[in-house]
Length: 126
Image (cartoon, rainbow, N blue to C red; front, side, top):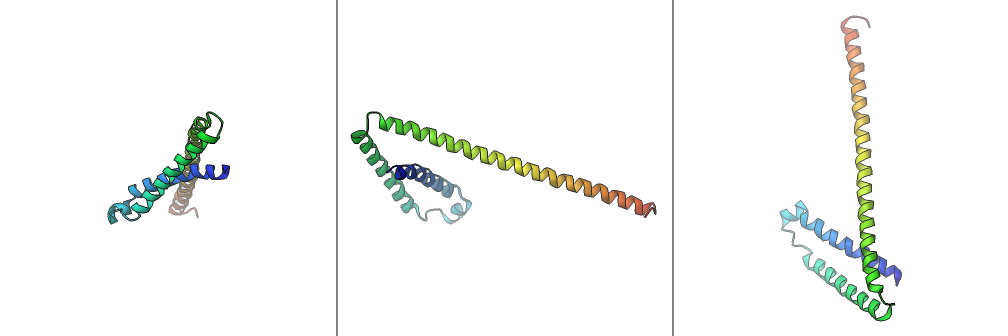
């Protein structure tokens, strides 16, 4: 059951993110964005029912405070995931910045070499 509970948390977040991405998509704005709305609604309702069932199970069969600990654990897990995503984005931006610096240096050195070559040709040194 623990594996299913972990999947539940990520599935809920992924589904909500997918709905948000779809609504903000420029293609959805062009086409009207109503395709698949019913399926998304059904999936969200199913998750809502599963969450209520999990809460009921935790409150009935788990030790006292299990549901509260689950809620706090969910919040911590979401914060950790968001922090990991922010860290990945930061690392990606740093990598892109480093690539841009290397490309800029390459063009600067290439330009200097071309300038020296053109100057040498102009002064008949080569």
